[in-house]
Length: 338
Image (cartoon, rainbow, N blue to C red; front, side, top):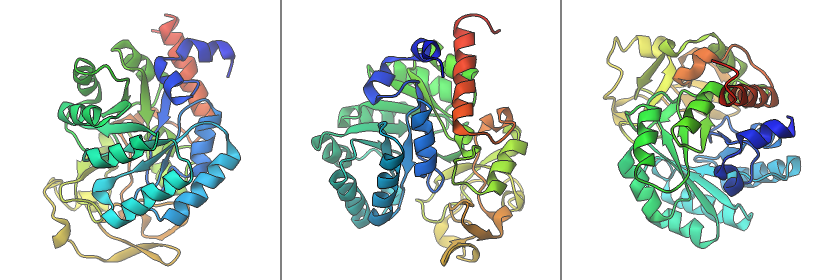
């Protein structure tokens, strides 16, 4: 990537996080493993390892592999609300022992968790779905706010559009804000910068890359989908709190709901194994998406994708995706592209 392009697209967020371009990798559980994180880092972006509910041993393995592949900064994504407290404690302890210098949190804002890692000298990026959450995260010591809109793929906490939410938050905070949800191109990055945000966070755009740990079936579904093919539902809720909605590409499970997409109680759902990762069972209605290692009924699993899926036409290396985003954003900012 030419130095000129990097220079033109930098924001203060880049200096804070130690990246070249203000494009963040979402901490997608199961998908954002070290290969994807390293590729994003080497291409100039800011990566997040998706370690929700993972064992301390896997966290150590992933962090070690990531550091062997790149010397660029990164964050580790943990989600307290979806993690047993004892495991969360062990995860944080392992990360701090490993010298992890940045954490990305999501869902409920827990000041004690934020305070623990801040006291250890780590940065905190907090993804939020409302202005109230943004205020709580800032008051608890967060360094960066990620404004996630309803267009986003995967777990979605709020019900406001990405840019409307980001603008509201920007009016109330002096912290750097990144926009997340439905952004897959340089035009989206340019739009975020135009409202005063300092960057974007992308999930779907990086899921459909060669380095992603998602199953090829998942990647192909993203390539073939449009934003209108996605639905917001809480039928895939096992392992998460009641009411935790996700955006997925519609499949046989969502079709069978006949429009009743929300209001499902995880305690009322059966635990039927439909797929496996090695000896690990993956249940129908669970939040587990198909990974490279998954076998079984992939079609019935949640195929996470945001409404920006319609802008993704192929599976490419991470470097190519970021370069295209940067080139398009630079062209827009220079007024060379309508």
